[in-house]
Amino acid sequence: MFSEKIVFVFPGQGSQYVGMGRDLYDEYPVVRHTFEQVSDISGKNVVAACFDGPDEVLNRPELTSLGTFAHSVAIARIIESNFGAPLYQVGYALVGHSMGQYSALHCAGSLTMDNAVKLLSARSTYMSMTDKMGGGMACVVGLDRETLEMCLMAANGHGYAAISNYNARDQFVISGQNDALDVVVARAQARGAKLAKRLNVAVPAHCALMENAKLLLQRRLEATDVQPPKTNWFSNQTANIMSNPQDVKDALAGQMTQGVRWVDIMEKFPEYNITCAYELGPGRVLTGLINRANVGCRAKATGNLARVRAMLAEMESRMAR
Image (tube, rainbow, N blue to C red; front, side, top):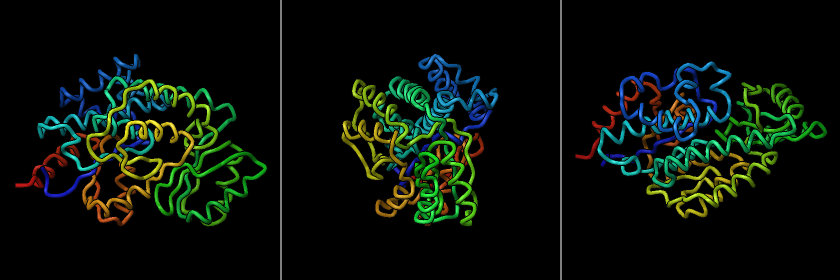
């Protein structure tokens, strides 16, 4: 369909903001339908949380996940309506970051809307239920992995902490218990990190503290119908393209306790000759990571009406003639 290979990338929690998607909701009936569908399935007023907030409501893990999913899928629906084809036929590959994997899997024809929404709701509940040790997350920028691992050693005796997101060669998220995180942040600052700070996240995602959540999600996934993705879907767990439904289930469950290998995924793009990326959903975190990764792929964010229109015009100009 297009003269180059496009990857659609889907953000995870942390990119949300009050008002996200409102201009798209006002412009496109398909966006209104998507947001209302997510609200109806979940029994949560996702529309009000996204458009009216306040922050403390939207930042609740379940509403953050559902709102980000709705925003991402709504933009996918605009693309599908514009080109008259499902997203998995428009894009060469789909990949999500953390909970964005569920957005990608739905758009890849692997999860129904109903199953994706219910899994995201359950996932958020399990994560909140199983965090009993006062945990959270922190971001460290400007150190390499070896130096950060030395900083993690300083947390011994103060609790548990581990790398949970490998976002770039010098950008990481760590998860763990509060006292341990504070020690690692202080040590990273002392070692010259450009940025080292706690994040406004109330659970230590993607680390061993989520073992109980992993087991609960695993049971839920075993009872859920998962179809083979209908285009290339990269797993956060392995950084490889995955197609077997049982492998997808195992990867989603395993992701609860294992790090997000985003940098490894980006570095696979040249192998597949992927040269264009569009971030579907709020914010531009993944756009920035891809553009800084020097992997021969240019990325653009599409979170508002002006950017969606620009994306559609650019895609139409690159259609194979």
